[in-house]
Amino acid sequence: MAPDMGRRLRRGATSGAVVAAAVAALAASQAPEAIQPTTDNAGGDRAVGAGETAPPSGEGSATGDSPYYTALPPLNKPGGPAVSINLPPVVTGPAEAGIPASVLSAYKRAELSIRSTDPACNLPWQLLAGIGKVESGQARGGRVDGNGTTTSPILGPALNGVGFANISDTDGGAYDGDKVHDRAVGPMQFIPSTWATWGQDANGDGKKDPNNIYDAAQAAGLYLCANDRNLALRADLDRAILSYNRSTEYLNTVLSWFEYYKRGTHQVPDGTGVLPVDRSDDRRPGGFPSPTVPFPSVPTSPSPTSPAPKPGTQNPTPTKPGTTKPPTVPTKPPTTDPTPPATTSPAEKVAALSVAANGQLTATTGSDFAKTPRAAALDASDKPVPGVSVRFEIVGATDTRFAGGRAVVTATTTASGVASAPALRAGEKTGSFKIRATVVGRTLDAADFAASVTERQADTLVPVGDASLSAATGTAFDQQVQAKATLKGALAPGVLVTAQIVTAKTDKEASAEGPTFKSTSSRTATFRTAVDGTLTLAAGDLLAGDKAGAYYLRLTTPGGGAVFVELEVTEPATTPTPTPTPTPTPKPEPEPSGSSTPEASPSPSTSPSPSSSTPTDPSTSTTPKA
Image 1: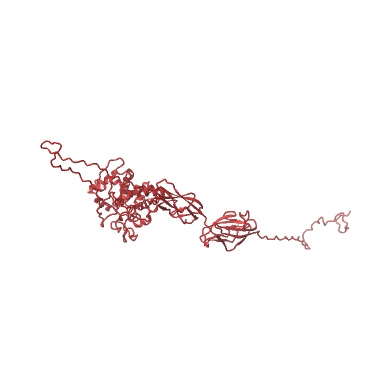
Image 2: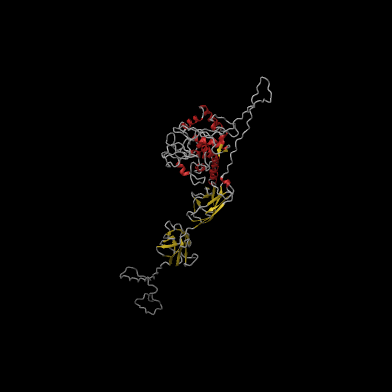
């Protein structure tokens, strides 16, 4: 981009010295907060400190890195003296601060809309104005119709790789009329592939048109705010601008216009804005700019002339001989520039915002709402007001969200004055909440929509497999429990199933004893059906408890589905204890004869007692004789 930049600066200035003076004046007058990143033209333009490396040309930018207008206005530090840089008159003077009415309205509307949906981005409309200036000279000086669409398409050069990026056609010529290569399109110069992602319908005409200034400004604002950027931070601001066109010179140029517009602007009628000499939307083949078509000159009143004296009359004032009094030239009365007609934004015309349709919104958990809120903007005569930005906000304790996971969105009223919110999707939280619609930038009464989320339903629940189970106390049921839920004959996935242990089918409360659920350690638990509508309790998920008896597992669903599974808890089987057999006393063994063992003393039981009646044999007596 650097060599091409030099050529365009030479064409915009009258000499090399003027170019040097222009650059010096810009550097000297730059505001403190707009310090330029360094450049390295030996190796191509490069942003230092921007926080990211520029990809190859044409990748990752909104414009395809197409050429842009580079002549700058005289910028001054706040309160500093004006610096004259001898640029062509068409790009100098206070007229540069003028922005066409519709273009200015589009920038400000985009800022309001995006600040309501993404306040952390801190998008200033002057940044959109700076980009719009360098991309198309504010839509060719504001040549747009009453709907904000350019009177003729604004097209950049073919991105064929000759001096520019090489981007083959991506839209079949639908936007740029070129079926071979892409071209940047519209006042904000989007390439078709980027517009396909970021295009918006901000004026409510049902079309996403890159040649409409309202649509293009809204899309540009969203593009700049992408990736959670905070444009109040210089690093994020640089990244945002470089993502639009990856060139340091482009960054510097946009920042200069941005600072210039922040110092003050004024509104001018559409079609009367100052056109740049060389801009990206109007170039001849070969890289030479097309001649700028001047605006029609404003006719001026002819200078009054002195009436010829009537015959026979003399000047009433005598003159000295030899002198001639110069003819009296009447003084031209002072003229003032006509005040441009004041424009009223669509939001200012709104007298009331009301519910147009779908005041009651319902959905089941995890599903899309069948309808979305629609609000009507009406003026004081109850006529619809198109082009109004309406903010829809989800209010209340709910996890319901708009498409993209957002809790706040902005939509624009159509020609019928109706703004429609995007699709709503319910979360897993049930309950009631509100969706509130308000006019962006106004304090009118809101239009509220009542919304609620209920559980998914199943009107039938049938068991799959055995309908009766048994287990002994202190153990777990070793069979699985399975049931299938349907709603009007169709499988019912994600349905909440309440499970309870009861002693009778008519019981309203869970039993105080008996089996329990392993997951809750109680006799009540909740589950959800799978994608095929089935509920499965695996073997071991149900504990038998310590109380034998007959019980039921009751499964119920919202919508009336119910099923009972019989549970039998038994006492564990007992084993009889065997009677012990007495152990017999062993008999003493007789002593063998001829034993050498000394004879034992007779036991008292075998020794004769003195009182024994057994006669004593004198021959055997051991008592000595007297």
